[in-house]
Amino acid sequence: MSAVITPTGMTPQEYLDWESTQQEKHEYIGGQVYAMTGARLNHNRITLNAVASLRQPLRGRPCEAFMSDVRLQIDAALAFYYPDVVVTCDPRDLADGRALAVQHPWLMVEVFVRQHGGC
Image (cartoon, rainbow, N blue to C red; front, side):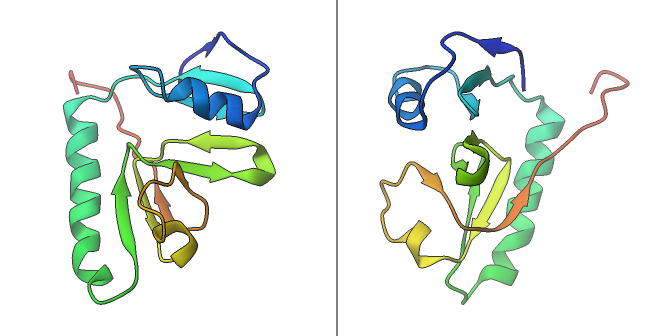
């Protein structure tokens, strides 16, 4: 996550409306909007490997894994995040393919890559 950017003090719906017009991704926490930073190659490799490793265990289950472009909505925190991987098995999340966020995650993965040696 990066620094708070304008506009701030948005409602969740205002954020969703505004975010849909943006080229970059932003996370929302309690009315504050944060610009997302770009990921490096190693970060993407690890994320892809995490999703790939979930394919077999999820096969035959009513679950789906999504990568970093799917929001996770946490109502109790008034927040929308873009986790690297999120898995949901909840029919409420999977019923509408046009939904803007997963609200009932089964698993969330956030990748942190230690930055050294040019990685």
